[in-house]
Amino acid sequence: MPLAIRIAGARLASRRQWSLSRLANRLTDEQHRLDDLTVGDQEVRAGINLSHALLPERTQVALRRFGLLGLPHFSAWIAAALETELDEAEHLLEDLVDVSLVEVDRVDPVGLVRYQLHDLVRLFAQERAVQEDPPKERAAVVERVLGGWIWLVERINETVPPVQPAIQATFRLSRAVDDEIARRSSPGRATGSVPRRRS
Figure: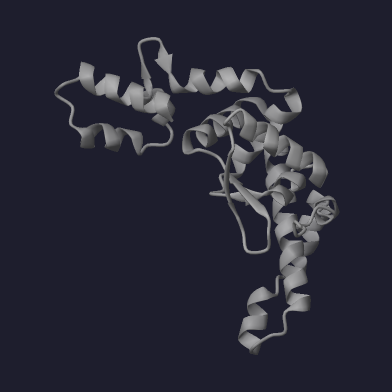
């Protein structure tokens, strides 16, 4: 982020006794990274918030949930598992790309677009999720996504012939765990939003 680079440079310029490594070490602490990227009236948190504040509420909620998951990259079905339909999830992601809060990472081998959050946007979104979403709601978000992954692993288990029993066993999940997550998170919503190949 250009703003983060400008702020880091300004902090170093006003603290000539600091080395680059000292600032870098301070910025490795995720809990305080956004606090450390502040100088005078310039603040990375406030810069991200300007874009965030202009978003519709539904898109703000989606961004908070992406930050909460903390994934290095994700496809639209993950967004859909956060309690929406796949088409709407794709629109939400594209809206976030348009305002530079989400980046297109790559297209994976099966043709799915994969997205990612810039590290600082992820921290901002995570911070807002903790501030604005009740703990039960945050837990439910994680459970829904886990439910979607479990469903996918089970489909792999059904369709990929095992090379050997040990490999097949790797894909098997405890039925008790599966039932508990299914009961709590209604992964059926996520299963309707399974990845599809783009033409």
